[in-house]
Amino acid sequence: MRKCVYVGFIVKNILTIIFRKVTQVTNLIVTLIQGISLGSIYALIALGYTMVYGIAKMLNFAHGDIIMVGAYLIYTSVALAHCSPILGILISVASCALLGIVIEFLAYRLLRRASSLSVLITAIGVSYFLQNIALLVFGSEPKSIPVLFNIPAIQIGNSITITGETMLTLGLTVIIMTALTIFINKTKLGKAMRAVSEDKDAAMLMGINVNRTISITFAIGSIMAAFASLCYGISYTYIKPTTGSMPGIKAFTAAVFGGIGSIPGAMLGGILLGVIEKLSMAYISTQFTDAIVFGVLILVLIIKPTGLLGKQIREKV
Amino acid sequence: MSNFNKNYPKTKMIVPPSNTLIPERDADKLPVLDVRNLGIDFGGLKAVDNFTLTIGKTEIAGLIGPNGAGKTTVFNLLTNVYKPTRGAILLDGEPTAGKEPYEINKMGIARTFQNIRLFNEMTVIDNVKVGLGGSVKENLFDALFHTPRYRKNEKMLNEKAYELLGIFGMEDIAKLKAGNLPYGAQRRLEILRALATKPKILLLDEPAAGMNPSETAELMENIRRIRDTFNIAIMLIEHDMNLVMGICEGIAVLNFGQIIAKGTPDDIKNNETVIEAYLGRKENKKNA
Image (cartoon, rainbow over all chains, first blue to last red; front, side, top):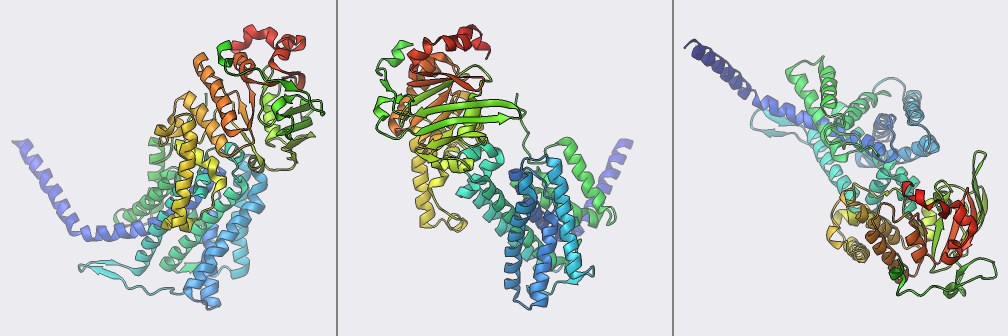
């Protein structure tokens, strides 16, 4: 009898909480959409990390700074040179692709056979180099990216609003990821990339130009970073030389979270990371957001060391 | 053993003016591979030295020798994976010096590996298509919108790939992951992937390793069939003496990086130096 009262009490409490949550469900949906939007940016950046890692077997820590360069290029071409936004984006994308190729050629190509630690240190060096160049050219004052597009927000019901920036980010991410998936799976170059990522030497002896394939991988990764900088720029508007660091590290986390080297893993990891970040911001604590995000990462890696979609590396016997 | 050779009369070998041994039927054509005084040093060690060999246009040649003699190193030199310290390689009359391995492949040398190196995460047919890659042009736009050009290319690639898979009757496993194939099928697929790059000479590094006698017999038939179908030269490294003596027309024996004997299977079988260096230790071969 007493037990029944207890159970009844607990059930009542749970129902009350659920009821409260139901009234907050619209808030949840809004948070989720924001999370997916932020996660898409992470995913775009994470794709660059994961592709370069998969193919060149190196962690390109300068990748985050390409976002910063991309954002400054949009700022320069649109705010200073008064180009049209579309032209500004094209300039930014093309220059980032070129920058990726140049960085690979100057900094990493000679280290192809060096230990991964040397390459990692070089990458950190390139990262600081880019940040300091930006500091020299643009100064440490934050610059504001002008409004590029005026997309009206969508109102669903009376409490859910989706901003134009969010829609643009989501749309762009879906398009880019679809194109990338088709590219990797259906084209000759995509096949060459998969071959190089599995076995460079075998690929080379099957007539694949490994250096060119790696260059193209850096170009594609940097193009995605440029698009990420566009999404980042329209959502956060202010940029400074260190703008790329935090999204870069978060995206790297996302890539590891999803399983580094795996393209669907980077997409999933990025979006989950964004959602976790926004959820913990909304429901747990704004200050502890990063701690929670990285805590989840540690938990996932303890349970599944290869990441969510990562493959078990088979040891050769 | 002898019944494998039943339909194949012994090739008459001749010595052309350059003082090397090639099959008589190839005598009037440029040798596909003309290697002169090839050598490489690893530190102070002469891993391969004074390697001189000529291979006829449609010859099946063997490279044998004890473990560590430098056989795989020779393959790596021929494909420029290692840059030779000395000597020259002429592929169909053209020097290969200074070329990248992928360029060497395009010039006409394809190879397989001692420990199979397929693209395991890719399907069987995609492995072959990677090899066929050099023969088509396509871009992202074509792939995204499935333009007529893309469909035409894909159709052609598919046809070619299935044709190659047909050689070993592997059409029905085309969509499986290469890494999930049984060992023997992986070896066969590696040969097909190499053939897809349209080589003039195919280098096989221990193709019979890990095979049982009936699989080896089948492999021998297949090697001959490939040579006859594609009219190419084949050079193989092998420890299985039945296979080497059964199908190779010319054999070179390597020991400590030097060629100690060259000749027809019969020459090699009766060569004292070879017997001492290699065949004399035949009992231990199984541990190799």
